Amino acid sequence: MVDLVLGANGQLGWYVCEGLLDAGRQVRGLVRTSPRGQDLARRGVETVLGDLTAPTGLGPRVFDGVDTLVVTANAVVPRSGDDPDALDAGVGRAVEEAVAAGVRRVVIASVPVTPVDRQVPFVQSRRALEERLRGLDVETVALRMPPYLECWLALVGSSIPLRGEPHATIGRPSSFLRTFRAGTATLVERRGLMLVPGSPAHRNAFVSVRDVARAMVEAVRRDAVTGLPHAEIEVAGPEVLTWQEVADVFGRLLGRRVRILSTPPRVYAAMAGVLGPVATVPARTMALNLLIASTETPWSPGGGGLVDPATMTTLDQFLTAKLALPEELPTVA
Ligand SMILES: NC(=O)c1ccc[n+]([C@@H]2O[C@H](COP(=O)([O-])OP(=O)(O)OC[C@H]3O[C@@H](n4cnc5c(N)ncnc54)[C@H](OP(=O)(O)O)[C@@H]3O)[C@@H](O)[C@H]2O)c1
Image (tube, rainbow, N blue to C red):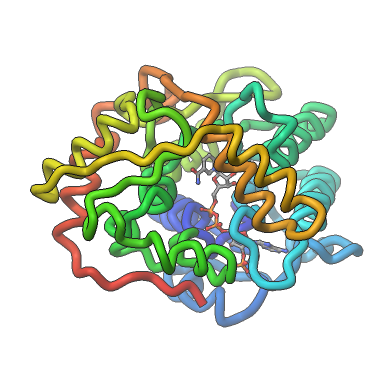
């Protein structure tokens, strides 16, 4: 029995592959090019080449012997030339191929339901995928996650969360992201300034990517996850924190005051609207910021019934461990 991971060389995808291997499972990972699969192959993953945007689909060889399909692939930080809409369509196609090939369960990494879902293309695409899965004759588990520590604590102006993360989403080769990071990558540690989307009082159950991967591995391994054919599970981190509390923890560990510069949701909404017709990736990024600026995920307890919250990584533990690592940053090839 094989577990197939779509998005295997991504940040979450990599940890899911590792976790499945550690659980003694046979893991196959889809990668677009051989070099991107080298680390996975060294780790024991069977890599298969394929592009989810191929109009003909991935083909039966990719799904041969697959019991569980795990979907983490996404185009939130696309490579040059990637078309996010084509990827979303391709993920839907792949899920249908998998079901036709006899896959027993599909586990997807998804996002919370929010009042601004319709304004955020990536969220819309995950909602559409969840809906599509509900119409298929296959057991499905959609894990909906709050903001990841490794991503959003970097995006607000720090490079500390990226230490020791060779597959970091925020290290991916996106020209837009690199331009944005050029001016903001170390604002927190160098200038004591945190760029927060929305109110500093907004609360989130921030979660580490490694804990998300543990939840996904559990959703693959368990004989029954919820007993329902189609389940949506919110996987919170171990503590609910405001952005102000995040800034305070950074400040305490860095030994300096960290101030928040907050941008209201309407600014992101306006930027997404203006950029939409001319620049897809920046517009989508503004929409994601709108999502964070206008919503909260104050969920508790952590773990979604899949991971014991007492074993999950708190913000203090996360930053303390990162600060003990060398400053070298990931450059995802
Ligand atoms: N970040 C957050 O705060 C947050 C919150 C809630 C949920 N989530 C969910 O968590 C997941 C994050 O996954 P991640 O960290 O592994 O993402 P990631 O680091 O951004 O990696 C993206 C992956 O998708 C693959 N991909 C993109 N286009 C492809 C194509 N055409 N064909 C095949 N593969 C393609 C990439 O391959 P290449 O390297 O070849 O491009 C890469 O493996 C997402 O599903 C997201 O919905 C994230």
